[in-house]
Length: 175
Ligand code: SF4
Image (cartoon, rainbow, N blue to C red):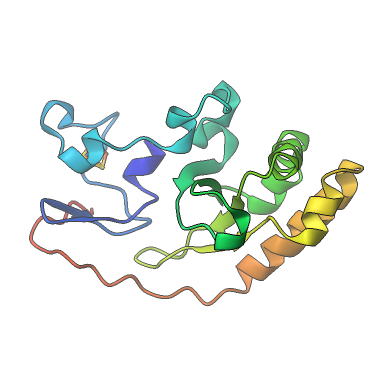
């Protein structure tokens, strides 16, 4: 139920700020049978893509993966993956399984983004990982990929997170 806390939900029928746990999230969704359409139709990357094993479950891995459609034109792909670090970012990006996933994804030309959530009510930050430096590193020893991921994380942690202005009001499910 990481998706009941991490993302912003801003639809006419239902709103919740990023980083604020929905008040219906109590040992599962307390209104599961009547939950709003936005929840009914939402699946994070871990639920949507079979490239993620059980270990990638967001609360276990510390990675909230999502499909990303805002892809720079030069990558010639309409879809990519955002890897949002939701628990101990530095520890996560140093894990061999994480470094491997990034290296394999970059070698396969999958657009990948490293992302950090902002404080509650703020937009997150993301950086594209498909840089010439990282793509080159992905073909060699994993140590170089890890070092470049640490560099990318440093960029993200220095980011000035901007507040998200809700477009809809009246059905705020934030606690
Ligand atoms: S209403 Fe939606 S966001 Fe709230 S607990 Fe249920 S599924 Fe999660």
